[in-house]
Image 1 (cartoon, rainbow, N blue to C red):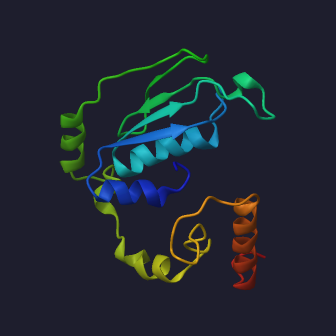
Image 2: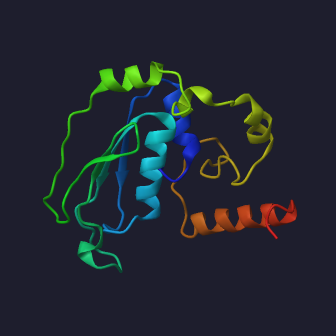
Length: 170
């Protein structure tokens, strides 16, 4: 999920150079939160982000064409290299220069955020804090179960209650 920076960071720290992001989002000429996040994840981790949007969605209470097209490829400097036009059959492609990305990652400087991280400063914080309860989709036997209706809302309400109780939210 592109809106959660830790996922992209964890993949980059394991050597990822290209993040494949499947999405179902509204195509917009304005800078949407997800489009801003794609650019941020690409820049802060010096990776390419290849984001493929759906080509329409049906059977729900949204206009059928509300999520058509606008797939993007964002380079490791956070620049949109190409964006597909809006429409069900639109596509985009670009060359990904992995040699240039690797050279960029090897250069020291203020621009190289990936090599300037001090992750140990946050290890204890991330390890000791919990927002969403873990393993909420496991049954009593430890097997993954299909989420029941209302599961996501229930988990999010529990997270809000936990954050209120700890004084994080006011």
